[in-house]
Length: 217
Image (cartoon, rainbow, N blue to C red; front, side, top):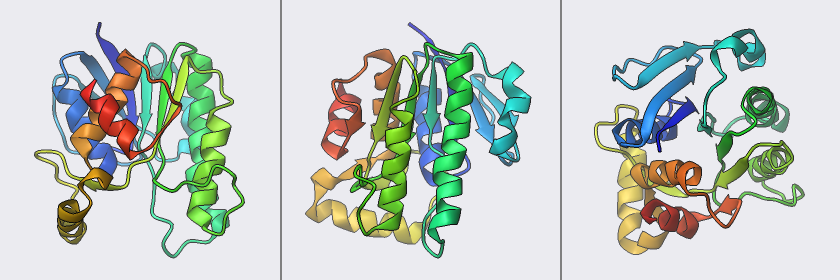
């Protein structure tokens, strides 16, 4: 089986790591990066679609049919942001893309990078966790073939990755000595996301232990 993947967020830390894993995977035939800005990477499997404003993605819909999966890795830190702006970027943008892709590719698997401690109740005190929970809950209602929410914690970069913050990686490496079960590599995240398409998983929401298990399957 070979699959064709749409991937968002390739210019970010998580998206680039997942992208590099996809390009090395023998059962991934093609990856279409949907980016707001150009990402300098060349590979025989790789295509790029520049969409400066994801709210206009319908204008590019003729280039989006025929894909088996979307790995939605686009995102932003909530630091310094109010809830309205963070919701527009995290919730509104994701739902615009997901609703369009569902109509174009009803047999698609849609996998969303969320975060550890996301708040499914949408009522907790932590703003980003509420917004991520709201996004997960809304995605679950869209009629994809399957939809998964990935909740990683600390992550180490993939081999050859360019978009890496040295201080963040140093902290995660240190934590990996003390809480190794809570740390993932981006290769594990990427492998798990690919396997969610190829094999599926028994849970819709994957915590760190689930991501590790699916990556090994």
